[in-house]
Structures are given as structure tokens and as C-alpha cells.
Amino acid sequence: MTDILIHSCGMDRASQLADLHKESFQEGSWNEEQIHKSLTLATTYAWMAMALSQPVGFILCQVNPPESEILTLCVSPPWRHHSIAAKLLNHATHAQHLMGCDHVFLEVAADNHAALALYTKSGFQQTGRRRHYYTRAHHKVDALLLTLTMTSKT
Ligand SMILES: CC(C)(COP(=O)(O)OP(=O)(O)OC[C@H]1O[C@@H](n2cnc3c(N)ncnc32)[C@H](O)[C@@H]1OP(=O)(O)O)[C@@H](O)C(=O)NCCC(=O)NCCS
Image (cartoon, rainbow, N blue to C red; front, side, top):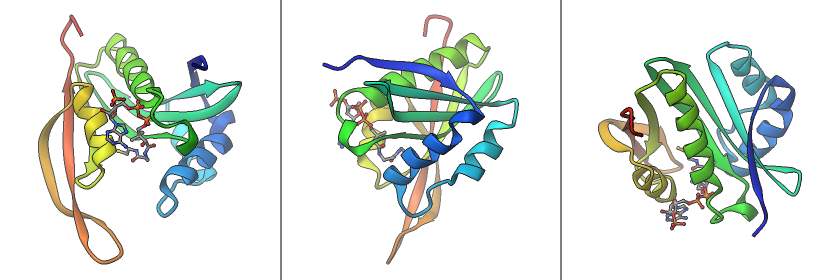
């Protein structure tokens, strides 16, 4: 198995993060300018996963202790099912806990079964629902609000 390295990254990586986002989301992906702008905020943190010296995934978070929010998370399609998202999530939530956060929030589409399985396995619980939040080609999909509660032992 290839070694996966997780490290924090900044605005200088905006172009690579935008490429990864486009690969994963196509429509509605965030471009380089949007990601760069987000990373100018002192409260925005990004962690990138590297394999064979190439970026293969990232997670972007807004950290306002004692709360934080996962803004986006994606893994390059050829690198999926190698526990990279789980590693990114674990790394980011651990770092947020060290920064003083005890709750991590996120929104996920109710039809995103892969992401829902990942978050549930990582300890997130559903705490809300926004009806018809996402627009698909022919229908609307609810957004589920998920929360991870971190205790001192987390
Ligand atoms: C969701 C996503 C980040 C998962 O990335 P990944 O690196 O393949 O996930 P992991 O290998 O770390 O999987 C960890 C767990 O998540 C779940 N999971 C991941 N992909 C899954 C899939 N396609 N179907 C069902 N469960 C899945 C499993 O429980 C898995 O544990 P297991 O390997 O022991 O079965 C990736 O599919 C992706 O980038 N999707 C498009 C972007 C997206 O939807 N992001 C989330 C927005 S909220």
C-alpha cells in the first residue's frame, strides 16, 4: 500500500485544490479563486493528502472554537477506497480538537451514500435536515446536518 501523507496547506496550493475539487464535483465545484479567497481567512484551514508526491485529496474547514465546520472534503476518483478520506477526516478533527473545538458540523446531501457512510463511521450523528436544499437535474435533495461531538477522550 502506498504511503499517504497528510499535511496542512495554504493559499499556494489553491490551484491543486481546485483541480481536485473539479474532479470530484464537476458541477458546482469551487474554482481556484474561490478556494484562494476562502484560505485568506484566518479561520479557514486546509489539509491535503499526498500519495507518491501527488495531491490526492483534501479537506477544508472553518474553525471557530469551540465549533468548527467542514466546508468540503474530496478524494481523487482513482485514489478512492484507500481510507484517504477517513485519514483526512481523522487528522482534521483531531487538529480542531487541539484548537479547542468540541463540535464539528457539516452538511451532506441525503443521496450521497458514500459520504454518509464515511461520516457515520467516523462518529458523526444527524442533528438536522434542510428540505430540498440541493438541486439535481430533475429533482431536489435534502441536506442532512451532521455533528461530531468530541469529548476530552476523543
Ligand atoms: C466521499 C469520499 C470523500 C470518500 O473518499 P474515500 O477516500 O474513498 O473514503 P475512504 O476510503 O476513507 O472510506 C472510509 C469509509 O467510508 C465509507 N465509504 C467510502 N466510500 C464509500 C462508497 N462508495 N460506498 C459506501 N461507503 C463508502 C465506508 O464506510 C468506508 O469504510 P470501509 O473502507 O471500511 O468500508 C469520496 O467518495 C469523494 O471524494 N466523493 C465525492 C466528493 C464528496 O461527495 N465529498 C463529500 C461531500 S460532503
